[in-house]
Image 1: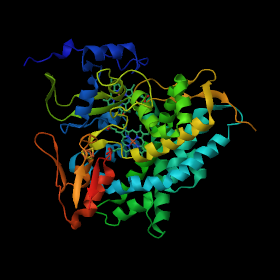
Image 2: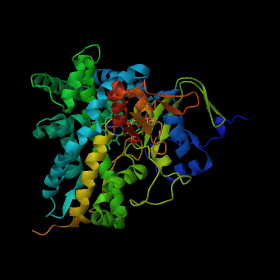
Image 3: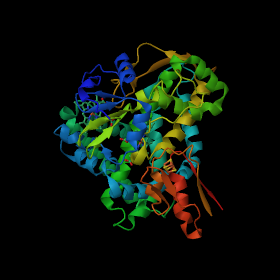
Image 4: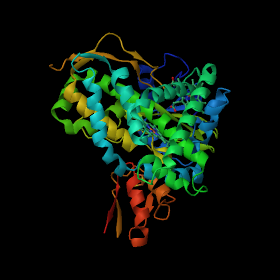
Length: 400
Length: 62
Ligand code: HEM
Ligand code: HEM
Ligand code: SF4
């Protein structure tokens, strides 16, 4: 077989601040090839190859080098290297096995009524007004308070936690270098907070909530060390808040653009679960995940050198015309998407995220009728981890 | 008891092989392999695998 030359591949300039994962350039590149060059490694564009490479044991998660790439040091960089996402092989498997019971679908079922009550409480705050900033008044408090529910934290802590997660999130942005002191200070605050919670929880009788289940694994320090326990709780806070916040904002945006689908969801609330999947397929907050080759590999005749960064484009794979008929339709059965990644690092929090977003969308569609944009929304760049910053909407007010 | 995997739903994430390495593994050909008939002593491990599967493709029949 003849080898494909890298130089023949289309080029996508991911470094351009105006680069968009949904641009015509990406669509054309995907028509031309399964793979594109970027200023840093390769981008994988089609469903089949993204799926295969997510599960390929010759690749490792690619974000571990991110702080070093920014010449950043300190508390965040230390945590980043130690936490689950950046562990590999048997070490990753051990931590994942220990964390699994705390993320079990059985646990989530019991939380559903609490998610439902929370959604109603937040909507009560603006339903009669007929306007709101969806991010500030719904998706941010909802995503953060769901984590409070999961960790059994005081609900009044939510603002504090949301701010910490937001500041730590600067580490994933292109301005990490300038923000490194703020990022580390926020990481310190989160560790102090988590350690206080854990110390308090140790005094309680054993139960089967999230923190208690992790504490049980920690009874034998060789199984899960104190440090690893702290890292895991920090990951649940950091990994669970901004993702859910952003994904819910993107969901509402999709439905504003497709009003007949919102109407359909209001009429058939049982479609809330598939609606979550359809949103994450077409408008995932994690637009791509990063991998790095641990050896020389060949994919579809293309030789790829060891140490190459691969950006696996979840959005572009999720809208690949070879697999999906065009359009946004919550009533159609689709192939699985990659919005939660896949393979060994498949999102650990997906049962929680799917559970809380299903409740949120179901109740929102019931109560927020005819939503439209109210002036301009502001969005993060349409790349990396994306979402709305501000999403002002108007809708039919609930009768008083 | 018997472990069943719905191979239409299975997306080969391999989370079952992480949770229960004695029962699930990948063959040379990349296909999922699992122990079908297990005795009571493996119940906890089998249930753990069924629990974590992101596609909920694993069921246990008594
Ligand atoms: C809509 C919400 C969410 C989205 C879109 C999302 C997305 C993702 C993605 C794409 C990955 C894989 C990253 C990669 O392979 O490079 C991941 C991993 C992870 N997520 Fe989520 N996530 C969400 C919610 C949550 C929640 C609520 C939690 C915890 C409470 C959580 C905890 C984790 C953890 C611990 C990992 C690392 C797993 C590992 O490395 O084995 N996520 N998430
Ligand atoms: C020239 C090289 C690169 C460019 C232009 C680039 C660009 C970007 C952009 C635009 C984002 C989204 C930022 C945001 O959320 O505001 C991002 C996120 C991210 N990048 Fe890069 N990146 C580069 C190299 C790398 C490298 C070398 C790594 C790690 C080895 C990396 C790891 C990440 C991670 C972990 C995120 C967070 C979101 C995710 O996991 O998908 N990037 N990158
Ligand atoms: S965890 Fe589920 S989807 Fe993944 S390989 Fe096992 S059975 Fe298949």
